[in-house]
Amino acid sequence: MFEKILVANRGEIALRVIAACRELGIRTVVAHSQADRCSLPVRFADETVCIGPAPSRHSYLNLGAIAAAAETTGADAVHPGYGFLSERADLAEACARGGIAFIGPPAGVLRLLGDKARAREAMAEAGLPLVPGTGVVEDPAAAGRAGRRIGYPLLVKAVAGGGGRGMRLVDDPDRLSDAFRAAVSEAEAAFGDPRVYLERFVGGARHVEFQVLADRHGHTVHLGERECSVQRRQQKLIEEAPAPGLEAGLRRRVGGLVAAAAGAVGYVNAGTFEFLMDDGGRFYFMETNPRVQVEHGITEMVSGVDIVKEQIRIAAGEPLSVEQDEVRLAGHAIECRVNAEHPETFAPSPGAIRALVLPGGPGIRVETAACAGDMVSPFYDSLLAKVIAHGRDRTEAIARLRRALRMMVVEGVDTTLPLHLRILEDPDFLAGRLTTTFLDRFLAPGAPAA
Image 1 (spheres, rainbow, N blue to C red):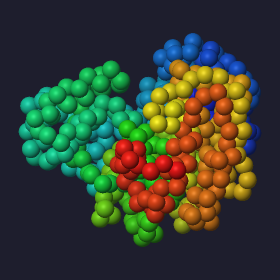
Image 2: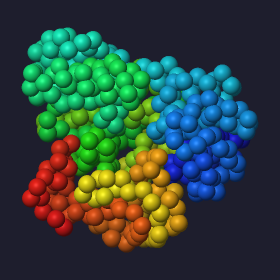
Image 3: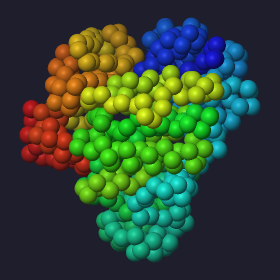
Image 4: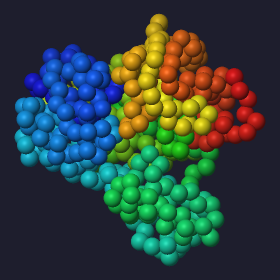
């Protein structure tokens, strides 16, 4: 087992990794920016090292600074968390050159899965069903020909994309050329890679993802699925596990396909396979997130498996602590991402947190690095806290989550708490009638307020 791990991230995920390391008896080093020098992860780590000024491109995205920090502090391994460099093959390779373990998939797997077009091909070969689409499309003329073949509406998507960037929805062939050029430009600016591909748009679908764990000894398990349909511009707001109404036989079938596909591409460590599920219960592979997910906590609550500790054990060469037939999903868990944003306009709300009261009570788990007196920085993601409720069933989980959100107090910045409370009262949400367009309908003019 490792003696010291460098945490190459910030906020609640950095605290989450520190907590797992503490339980495993591993010392931690937090690599932080100047803006985060007084943060909770910095206070609770065994060691700290400043890797640059506040802008992430000079700190958390500075691969050289992170690699140097790991080497100079004598870290055995690097945990990248999520976001920032977590999916960068370059970081995995830099760690390997320095004799340091990377807590994530091998660099070759990261390169494969980071190219969405190549990943589609690999998953098709592994037996996963795909939405009709293309490989890399070179120009608007080629896009037009492909569009006539796969049909409209369709999506233009960045090969290196994520989070909705480099993506355009096209429902009219006459608009494809402009959308193609806009997606290429945005992909180049966001990822340094202008390549795009096309994919049929599946309307009225749900966003369902499966959590997998794979060790270096050929063992792969899935921990069930998460429902992630409540999202705004491809950014998730509420997640739950298991997905409402998904029957056990379908879970076993799709989970088995996912585990086999992970094995086929040599996947190691924790990862998530994301799907669209249409109203007929048919699944279509979208992409793989080769890292720990923001929403990993709800899967931990229903499965009893500590995903972050499993990540560390796997990277240390240990076998999985659980076999597939030992995975038992108990109850229901729901997570709200409370962001420092205006609940109606979604405008970011940086500033000082004057007061913060976190909820507790039966079935409640809160993950945050915020405390009263902290500054919500304009330099980073607006996620303030993840509030998770677990209950014997979905009804109890919703009731507990509603109670917890009403007990939570944040003063000094705007938050999305009022929006979450409205959603938790919505008849469609309560009935589990969820699609990726749920929030568009919910926020449409005339939608009822709580």
